[in-house]
Length: 231
Image 1 (cartoon, rainbow, N blue to C red):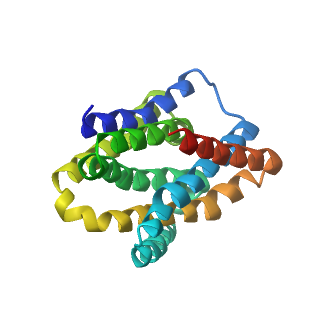
Image 2: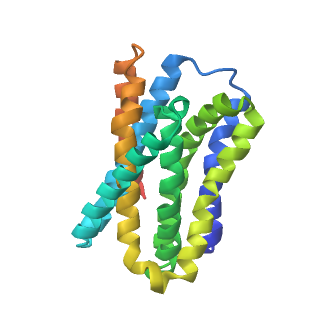
Image 3: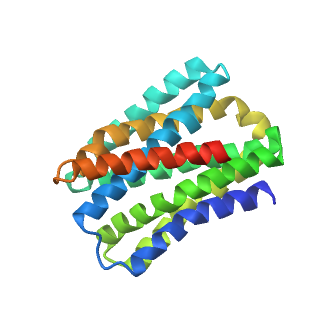
């Protein structure tokens, strides 16, 4: 399996995750808060351990610090510049996913070229499994924005396609972008941490479902711990 095909499948998993919205009339507040908590747990693990920690482990401490700060600042800046009716945890969750799909694609492509096929495949599997629940939440959010289940699923698939595009760039330009991969990973990690702390957790804790959302968060985190141990 080539790096591009692996990243394409990984990206499509985001859209696949959104398909259940065709059969779900509406997610109630409790379910949405649990799913938001679950996604937050996945994203914290992905941001801290899949994106930021590898930078530190490889000795790229300065790139990690600068990347985290700039990633968080970008999300803050985008939040300030958005129209008031767009600034909420749900919409920012979508923005964060668009941003973090790009370095993930870079890593899959570069992983194949620099570390070997097995490393690239393992990383692609981990991201694919992570993308499915994220896709469900993104699809539900977009459904409420565009008022069409089919358009929401289409847009969710398009969001996921950022990964194979970035993987293709990673394969073609590895010798030029290798030095920027740690920074881009930390940048994405910082954007994720900002959105989780500033938007997602407050949103799922403000409607009386905070305990359920907290256990959703923990379960999402544990799922990623198990996944990391297996893969």
